[in-house]
Length: 214
Image 1 (cartoon, rainbow, N blue to C red):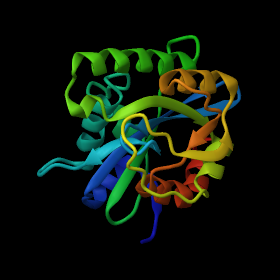
Image 2: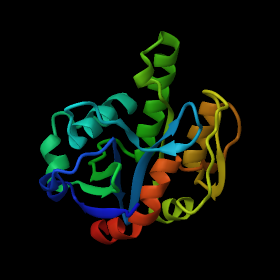
Image 3: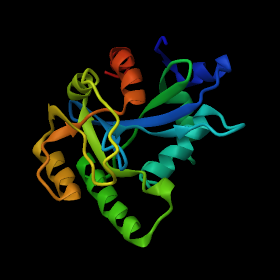
Image 4: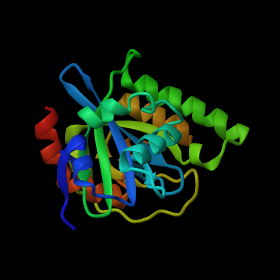
């Protein structure tokens, strides 16, 4: 399938429907651009906050719903749908789409969001939150160069359970490594691999997206 990139606004106008839709937020930090991904609790792989589009649900509304559930409301776009439509960039093929959207980070560092997500996930796990809010073990940030490199790494499905972590060879910085290591109760200094459906879109759509937002 051919991977294409366009604005969310223009994609809506085409009337194309998708089976899967998700969101990857990003923020600017000085001269850096950091993308927020999730680590799937079942596969131990890096993924967007996304999932299946329900009957009569638009791909935009599905992405917003999934992002709210899977980031435990840390990225809740339900009151800013217009921002998604007006400013989002969509990477898509015939079956699925990922919306790339810039977010303003109010805390001192994007790493703080990842840490706060981890604490909230641990509380929810002990409390027995519903499955849709426990699908992702960690929130993780990655810079453009590392993401582009990671999109070239071959991946397989991992069925090891909620503490699994499918390691790549791409190193992460110490701040991110400390957060992930605490979550998995062991030293981890590399990014996990990318979930295959997400990798397919990111691998072919990255350069076009980056040229639009850099």
